[in-house]
Length: 267
Image 1: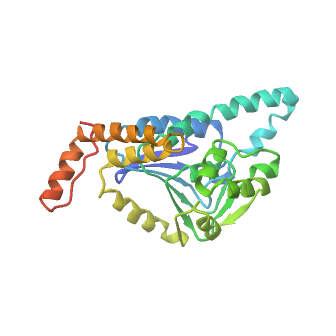
Image 2: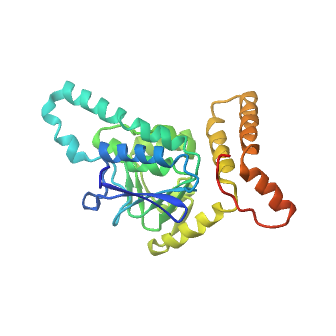
Image 3: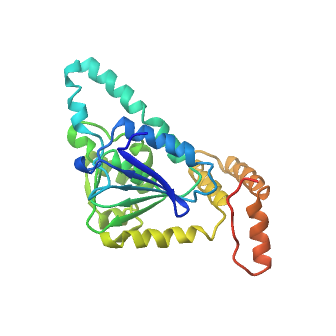
């Protein structure tokens, strides 16, 4: 696995750290492919209660590595188009997995989150941002549309009208502006982000992780379901949960007037 992104499991969570600070953590296929492998590794791990994306150094991620794009200019028009189709399609697995990941996903944003880097922010369930960070819809400024699932996540986060405005103007948002639009959940001084993350993840211990994960997936699929389909999906999710140890623990703890100790195990 590439050392351009660092992966670790600790403190009950999984951490993915973009590790190219010399180029503001610009993304490439090796990084995103590594993320796909990591998401496959953690998705059924009961020891992993949450996932954190963050950047090494002063920035979250500057998005796509433009220098690597320029290296392909000698391919000519058709060659460049063919290359870019393959390259962008290769990103799909990571974002399909991210959308279906049955655990909270958190982005901790320092400095710039731009272009493709914003896709990780928009695809997160919680976003903690430094008060001096910037969210930059950069692709239109270099002749590209929003990509790697940004056009999927963005309207779901901010609504279609705001999504059009942000995308079609190549907007740059402060942390406070992004919070007002619902992209960011909390804004803190940069030096306070680690403490804010610790407080947030402590709250996850109060809920059964597999039940919470199923709720997340139910909410995600609700946009495409009728109420009849959604009700049936809820029935199936409940049926799965009652067959797992956390259900018995939750009910027993409530009756015994104590805090539940959830394991996150499948059965």
